[in-house]
Image 1 (tube, rainbow, N blue to C red):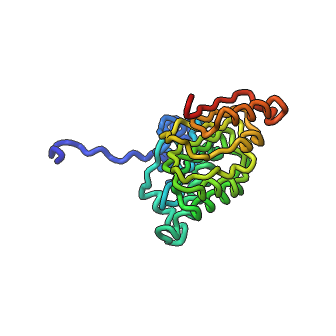
Image 2 (cartoon, rainbow, N blue to C red; image 1 turned 60 degrees about the horizontal axis):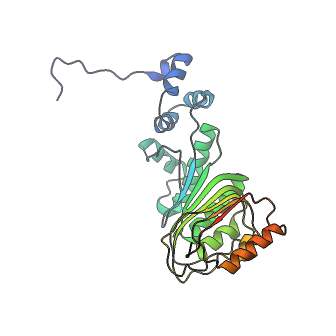
Image 3 (cartoon, one colour; image 1 turned 90 degrees about the horizontal axis):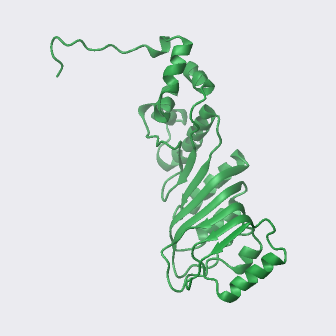
Length: 262
């Protein structure tokens, strides 16, 4: 409770500040505060777009049973201002509204910071319809992506095979961090074309599921391949090395592979 003699501070009319003063105030705000503030005035949107803010990494995240959510590297929570976007989408709720709402919100964030989506993070148990919707939207939106991470407990091939079937944009770095089921079959990578293909150490089983083939490596077009857990035998590795010497994947500069016996 306020002391009876304590003066309650009055709200500060920030929009009445001169341009330069307002410019300096906004420049020192965090990403979340800047986004929230942008919903209040078209003038503020114009000012925010003119400020050389620290580059936010706009990341698209797809999770199981959810539509993708979009946010800069500082997490954005849904505020009352963001809820206004629901009204913009005609009052739709739940999954009916989710994807369309997310797309509109993402375009707003990207336009505000004058940036494309930097990275895509996908849980391998994301439903195929959600993944397909996300990839089709991304295909139309931009030609390339800096980074993509696919992670989680992988019990079937459907989601990853669908990812490589539907994706059209190029990826600079593709990273897999998966716990593989023994029933997993080789993923259909098609032509594995990316600057860096990285498979982080997984919960390794013995034997390792046959999730990647020698042909997938020989037909790939990568500069760096780092495979932290592979089903390859010594014979497989000899085939890969001979293929590389004979001209397969001429862009390759670094190749690392770990087998069960390594």
